[in-house]
Length: 157
Image (cartoon, rainbow, N blue to C red; front, side, top):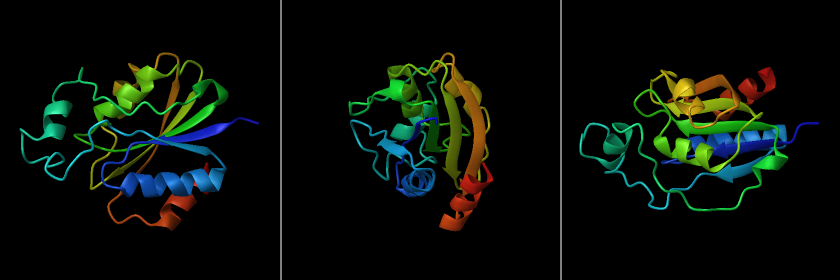
């Protein structure tokens, strides 16, 4: 039986809530991708071109530092990877996470949260950071999603 991990980045707690539901439902371990410097509300202001998130997302090579919490990726076959959608892609800290770990041969199921955005170019932009991983676009949970929405998606897999 494949060992599963739910890894996630959550700036506001919305993605974290979905990740916790998924991990519990599938019996997976859970790992939070934590930035060394937490994002403030001002950092997340997408309307401000000088905000931290805007600056980071305008530079595809930028890799925000993350807290170095140990993770033995070798023990996992399937990774559910969650994050909010920023500018139609995953925040670049998700690339930081992927580049820190050997993802070769891993099945990676993506899930995301968003106000109204869809996947955009997310899978392709993450694939460059995880050579040999098999990425699958799962679902984008839109604003107002419920725990039942998350459970129904997991049960559909």
